Length: 156
Image (cartoon, rainbow, N blue to C red; front, side, top):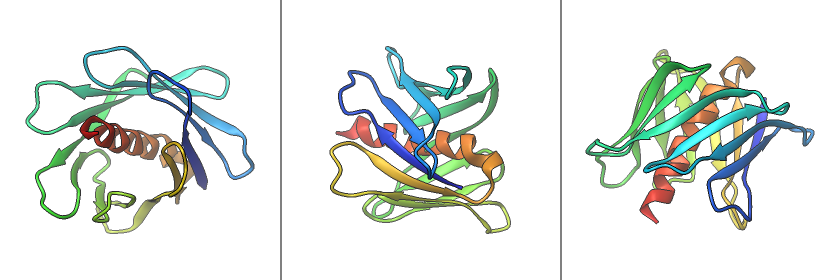
């Protein structure tokens, strides 16, 4: 399953639309005013599916993920010199990124690919192609991509 992750061009808060390969809206992400990042994820009909929230009191950026109001895990940035490193406490997944922080591979605890995330260059807004192996993992993978993108935006 391929997802197209596009940040909205004119938006004061973080807002994204996520489409399938046919251009149908699958998810809508809306940022809310907060002391830290708070991103709510809705389905195409406007029903809230989950949200991610940045923890303020942490040495490195940390994002908690919730689906249906229940905590499912977190992702936090780790200290590294060359490649971005993130620690994921969700489903036993691991994530590896390239040195430019554009492309990522998410793997399960056995080393199998869960998703491949590729940033499209030369776009006016942040745009990613997310290739998810199993559609049931799409929401959780989307949350990880949102957290990574929010962390990068915080450094700008």
